[in-house]
Image (cartoon, rainbow, N blue to C red; front, side, top):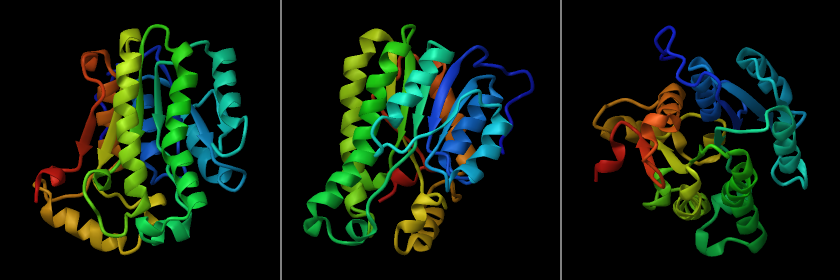
Length: 261
């Protein structure tokens, strides 16, 4: 891990919600750990009872004062998380949304052949859930704040085997721009973070992912793969007041891979 300098408590007194930690390899974990290292209080969610044993030790490491289940497809769970934040904190400074899902058969098939139910489920979890979280976070960000979601280069270019998820990420990036325009007057900034390929649990569902990792390592100008800590620290920087006039952007953290043909 890239450890922040001792005493660099840039987010002392700040509070945020991180959604999407599945284990200690998750991008969301890299983000939560960075914000906590910089002094923020961090609320954490876990998907379900099966996921809880993997996430709970990480929540304890963060000293998370709020630790609740959140499956965005279960009615009322999202609202319950924000109700708990409202009751315990009464405010929110940042939100990290790091979740995406596509049914296996929909992800493996051609976009042209996507069934309606698979398409809708992909869009619900991967895009609409961020829009809904923005809606719920808005009244808690009375002094401004920052909303982040995770995207990928496959939203912009056709990436083999990324398929329907590329469509969902393209919608997500568009939502970021519209939300940034709507929430900007309230001092709320919105960004999509686009890391290079990472060996996360979510990525394991993409066929031939190892080949994608090798290609990224070879082609990126930095000649190395991004880590979850690289993503976390960059995200924390963008949440800081120093970046207050940056909003509505897709920010690549990929060693420069996206600039290479």
